[in-house]
Length: 192
Image (cartoon, rainbow, N blue to C red; front, side, top):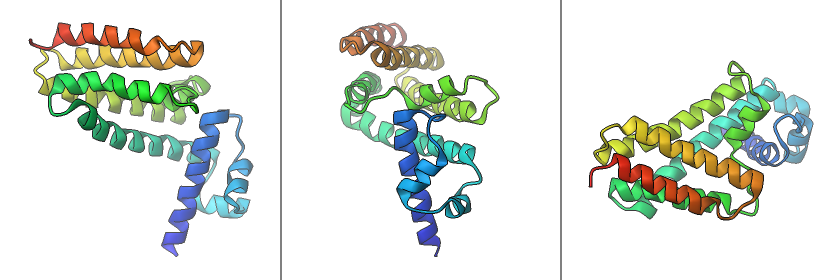
């Protein structure tokens, strides 16, 4: 029985991720989500107390998936050295923003739809962004940066700028600008 419940919950999250990301959190009703999964409203409420609860599950799920993917791909693209792993961040950004189904960063989208800092969806998205920055900070510290926090903050700001600029303008050169700025920041902070 537990397996079926978990499976249904996972399907609800999967459908909600796709719909919220594509159409916006506020534009999607839970009836669209549970209808696509093929369950009743009553069955939905066995897994989630509300749409807000589902939104938080989606954001937490996306944060977990992003962290797993990030750690694996940083190693894959950047190898073992911190400087190459920091550079690899821009390979990952390029991969993400060049997807046909790119609709911006789900976490940025959530904070735009829920701009009040006390809103649970806003807080969940902000936690995801802080978690990403912590990964970058840890790599910077391993690389011997004098101020790993400053390096991480600056690189993350460039990455956020790339996400938003590419989403808003569609400019394919966005990643090239982001890489150049990233190289300057890395060179400034890491020992030669």
